[in-house]
Length: 482
Image (cartoon, rainbow, N blue to C red):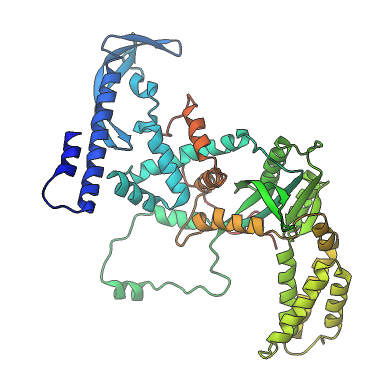
C-alpha cells in the first residue's frame, strides 16, 4: 500500500498514463498478495493428521502440495492440503481446501463466470486478449473451452427456473424465427485432425502443385446449423397508439423448432398462459409451414399474423418480376407496390390477389423472362391464399396488436448473427448450444442472477476436458422460415 501511495507522491514529473498503469499493476500485485495470505490462512484449517468425513468415508490429511489458483488479480501460488482415505493410501486423493472454497478446476468462480460472459460477447481469442490487457494474465485456451462447456451446461436449467418478470400486461406476444450458424462438417473435422504435411517450397510452388478447385454457384454453403429463436413478451400501447413490447424474454436452441416450442409453451404457462391473466395471445411468424403447424399444436387459441415485412417482400418480388428488364420503371414499380401495401394494410387482400391474378393472366407462357415472371406471381398468389386467415392486418391493428416481426428479426440478428455467424467460424453442436444459451441469459439481463445461481450449486465443478466436437453435415434438420 505504501508503494502505491508513493507512486502518487513522487516529486519527479510523470504523466497520468504512467501513474494509472503503475497503480493498476500495483493493485493487481496487492490483490495477489492478499489472496495468497487468504489461501495460506485457509490451509491452516486442515493440518497434517486431521481426520474428516466426506460422503460417509473417513479421510486424513497427509500433507500438502504446491498449487496455482487463478484469480481475477492473477495466478496465486500456494499450498493445498491433501487428504487420503484412512487405511487405503492408494485411493483417489481429496483436496479439502479447494473443495471447501469452491475453486472449480483451479480457478475462482468470479474468473470462470467472467470468462464465460466475455465469451458470450466475443470470440474466444479476443476474450483471452481482453483478459490479458485487464488483468495481465489469461487462462489457457483449453481452460477457456472447459469454462464455456461447464457454465453453458447450467444455462438452460437456470433459464427454466428464473423468476418471471413483473408488470405483464393482458396481451401476450409470441414470435419465432431462425438463423443459421456455420457448423463444422465431418469431412472438415477429419481433415483438421490429420497431421500437417511438411511444408516444402514457397507459396507459388504450393499453389501450383495442389491448386484448390474453385467452387461454383450454389456450392458455397457455410454448412449452417439452424438456431430456432423465440421471444415472449407482453404488449403495451403507448401514448402514440403503438404497441410496445414489455418484459421481453429470449429463448433459443439448435435442437429443433419443436424443442423451442416446448420451451416457449412452458415459459408461457409460467407467465399465466392458459389462465384468465391474458385477454389476448398473439403469434407472429414468417411463412414456414412448420411454424404454423407447431403454433396450432402449442398455441391453438392465439391470434395469428403473417409477418407484414414478409408479405411486403413478396409484393416487391412480384413488382420486380412484372417490371423485369426495365431500368426506367423504378417510379411505377414503387407506386404499384405502395398501392398494394395500402390495400393489404386496410384488409383488402382479395383486391391484391385479383391484381396479381390479372398480372399473371396477362403474362404469356412463352417469351423472354416470362417463365420467371409467372413462377414468382404463381408462388405469391398461392402463398397469400394459403395464409389468408393470417393476413387480417386491419383487424389486428384495430385490436392494438402488432403486424410485423421486427422484434424477432432484430433479436435473431443480435443473438445469433453477431456472435455465432462470424467469418471463419465453424461450430460443433454442443459448444454452439452453450454459447447460444449463455447469450440468452446475457441478453435477458439475468447474468447477475445466473452468477448467484452458480454460486449456490454445491456440485459445480469444471469438467476435466473440453466437450468433444460434434459435427453437422449438409442439409439442416429444419429450414429457415420463408
